[in-house]
Image (cartoon, rainbow, N blue to C red):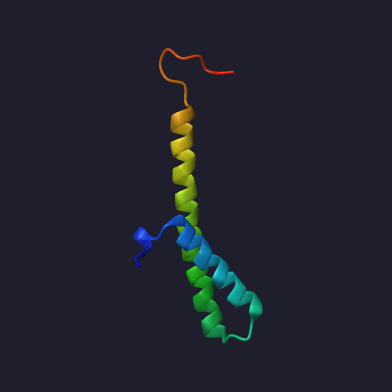
Length: 72
């Protein structure tokens, strides 16, 4: 699956697996570095999804022209 189409949930789950494998140890330095790099990419994908969600929420919650700023 390409990283462009990786869902937040898939990226998060794979990232958790990467962390688990790194914490378990027993890997070569090269394998550890490769996993670390993959984890960084996955964390970036998750962050992009979260930033997009924040932006969508901010847009929905922003006062519309003619609305009061605070609905409560």
